Image (cartoon, rainbow, N blue to C red; front, side, top):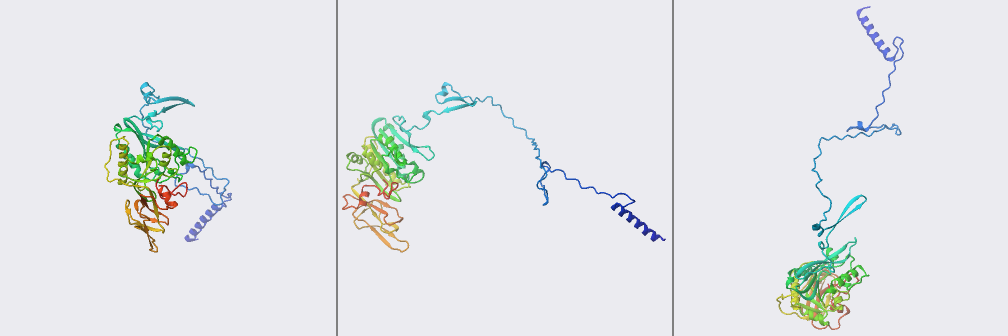
Length: 468
């Protein structure tokens, strides 16, 4: 056997032995068993560190899933806690010494083992109600009148300003914003009350800048329930919300007055020339109107439910002072109202501050609103206070689609004491308020109502034309 043949034989033998060992057939030994793979250790939450995914195959035993043990949480922080100063020096026991007891009253009560300290605010720390207020002479003091309850049950305190003079005298009440959107009156009351020196005043002036707080907060003429407060006086303590509010205001404020001036403006995008609405058939009311200087006077008994009418029926001389338009502060209107009020105080011998006026204004005994017959864009041809002749053009209404124009003319000679601002109007909209010194010939039912200075109301909640 040559060398090459021997080498091949040795290689073959080595391969054969290796194969026998692999299949367990070498030299008669038993078959070699391959041990099964060890089961994976139980999976616990403590061993899970991100990122790690536990994956279960589709054929996994879903009823014997591996138990997941909650890891033990160990919080280690190297931040030392702050050192706080001792609090033993803080005395939480209320001090009820004589000096403190004059200002604060304290009670200590044990409730379920807990010491409760109740501090009672002294009564003079809060603004007193009008009925409870002790008004001092020679000072201006703020009190409150409670109008009722809001929806959440809380009472609504309404500010009331009272200036009590150093000397005895009558009580004059000045109210504003019975309609919440009438701002000129609010400013007029503020200027009046804070311009009075109570030390030089005889009697008492009660000013209520905002009677209708609900409407004022919502920039609305009406109360929250859409009722017109000036249709419910003198009110009813068992009636609607508006009627109860009117009753409270009338009995707590107005009945303390010897005279009343109720400030208003025009309504619904209308403006009014400064004017007094007064029942000139009443001698006391007529005497009251003599103190307003150069102010237009319009005879009007006032509608049922108005504050002015209710006051007169209760024996209190009352007038309505109209000036300007709603939702605006107009300097001319406010200034006229303030000057008129100071002239009234001088006439009543309550305060020596008569304002200088121009020519006396006439008294008008009837008036009516001229209405638009067509809808469209209203453009006025006259200004507020203008004297007009019968048949004179007051303005035009133009249809923006067809371009048709309809002219509005004065039905009789008179003076424009109220008018709608330029705007879009519907048929029947009251556009110009014309007053005359004489009686109207055969006034319509609608004219009669307007000559009385009230709305032709379409419901209990709203009127159409007049502010009062």
